[in-house]
Length: 132
Image 1 (cartoon, rainbow, N blue to C red):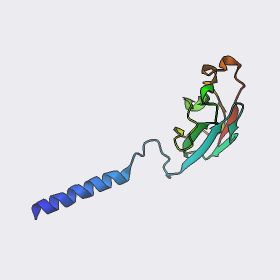
Image 2 (cartoon, one colour; image 1 turned 45 degrees about the vertical axis):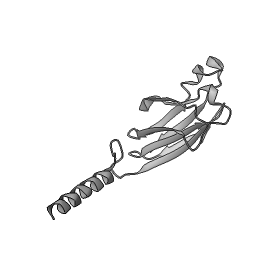
Image 3 (cartoon, helix red, strand yellow; image 1 turned 180 degrees about the vertical axis):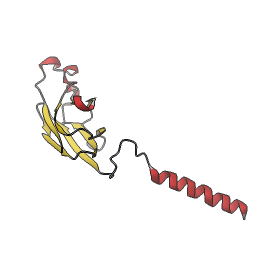
Image 4 (cartoon, rainbow, N blue to C red; image 1 turned 90 degrees about the vertical axis):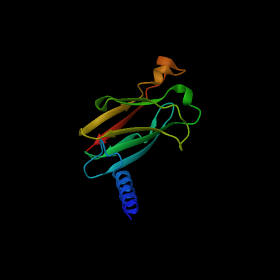
């Protein structure tokens, strides 16, 4: 009987610890914004991302088909983000996560394009992050 009680306690502890998950950096109200983003040769789609102050943001970024060698990326200086995106597979995007803890309008641009096949001649790619 004691072994059964210990086994049940261990199962309960394991189950409860799995439910807690990793909440580091998430907003206090638990709002998670998932934003699919496609990076083409000259643009981001969508060109504007709207989130609320305190949202935990997950940008799921992919390079447009045929552009993986361009070394596209997502850079948001105010959030310390500068991530290269070379995957073209929407089922396996590059995930960029951050807590939207600064209100304002911020430029999203490609800080990594110069590393691709076009080098510094790559056209500018810009979008907007709006945190209200």
